[in-house]
Amino acid sequence: MTYVITQPCCADASCVVACPVNCIHPAPGEPGFAEAEMLYVDPETCVGCGACATACPADAIVPDWTLTDAQQPFLALNSAFYDAIPQGPRAPMWRMPAQRRVRRSGPFRVAVVGAGPAGLYAAAELLAHPEITVDVYDRLPAPHGLVRYGVAPDHQQTKQASGLFEYIESTPGFSYRLGVELGRDVRHDELLAAYHAVFYCVGAASDRTLGVPGEQLPGSVSATDVVGWYNGHPDKQDLDVRLDHERAVVVGNGNVALDVARILTRDPDRLAATDIAADALAALRSSAVREVVVLGRRGPAAASFTLPELIGLAGIADLNVVIDNGGAPIVSESPRDSARVALLAELAARPQRPGLRTVILRFHTRVTAILGEDRVRGIEIERGGQRETIEAGAVLRAIGYHGQPVDGLPYDARTGTVPNREGRVEPGVYVAGWIKRGPSGFIGSNKTCAQQSVTALLDDIDAGLITDPWVPAEDLLSRLRARTEVVDLAGWKEIDRVERARGKTAGAQRRKVTDRDELLTLAAHGASPPATRSLPWQRKSAVGSR
Image 1 (cartoon, rainbow, N blue to C red):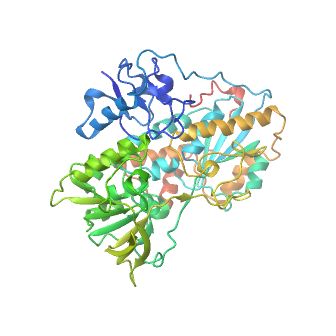
Image 2: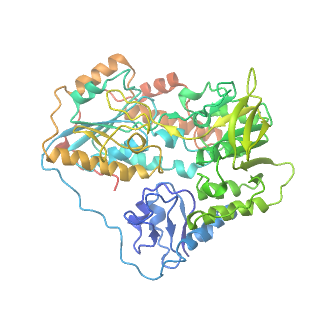
Image 3: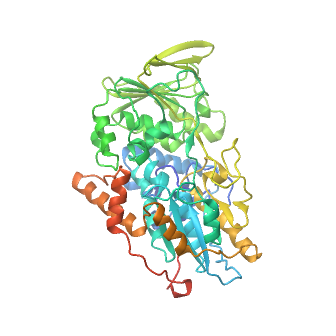
């Protein structure tokens, strides 16, 4: 028996650390790890112990005998990775580094702005040091960022990364200050006055635009906003998603484009058991959409979606997947894309089944205009010098994310990032996640990113570059509570409890609360009374993410 990785990798690499026979690659430090769409288990050296499955935060590793028909391609994919690598025992290639200790005794207070994967991985790395306590801020009353609001509801395994976040939240010295917006409720200089250091992990909040006529028509929306809509993001519940036409067009061919196309064409009864927002589920039940056309500017070999996402789309039994390459052959341009191109070629050869919803992956197209007067009626594209109109009721752009300026910090408008050196903006100010490196990588990529940024802080502490705060943290909290409703960890746990209970009643994973006022009301019922915080030497232990 061998274990098999069955979905896009979170890049957390916990499985690599857990494996006793070093059969999971590429490992951290090996060529290709940073760019890998997923990791691979060597079937020849796997001993079937299951340690990797236990360690995986996304529950994505399973024994081969449990694979479904849709997951079978992953078995061949894992084996193929090792075809060119000599088999047999390998020396361990990934060892746990010794715990670094700072030379100053502390205690140190650190603020982390952003409660998504980047912020929580940063908190975990900081809390691995018992001298450090962490307050995590976020403008929303509910944490977990893209795991809660960005992962597609039919990818519940990926959402299980929230279990790791719960572990981080339970670490001594961790606290939440949710519902607090930077620039509105708290300023950068106020954070600097109350903390030894501030980490900004605010992601890339906006999307790129097409820059074509008609883009502002009703029915033309960001796919990123649509993702937030069906995931229950409080800011996206009034989004004007037009589902009254049999065809929708998604511009872009990355994973977000495939996610949106898949959700718009999935059987709503299958989505009902997930954590999809109730209003979005109701809209999908009454949707007229039967076909989604996904437009890519380049050819199949240059598509941005990952192979695991394509395997997932191809494995949906009640869906036609059509490949439109303009009559050109589908050929690989490098060994790296060969498996993806081979699957696209196989999909192109599949017979279409009448009566099923359809996703069309159309390549070599350029959008020239979005058509309509009072609303979207279609889209004009150019291919091979010829212009063509596609009738559609909705156009969703999925052409990338872009970071926004952060209050009080420098900003590079071209990259949408805060200029930094290995996470350091200046001593006492650090960044991690997409605002640091741009919109790239997977959920677990933030772990390595956070480790680098935290190392920069530790270096600055040892160099004597970190100054003590001059405003007590409790004074800042009192000010914040006078300005807005602050949600603490107990408040979030009450929101989480209610959502899970409502989900259980509905036969679903959870039913998210999508109204901000209701979130705050629930949080107030579970909020902890003000209490004196324990000092680091009064804590029993401090466990990080390792």
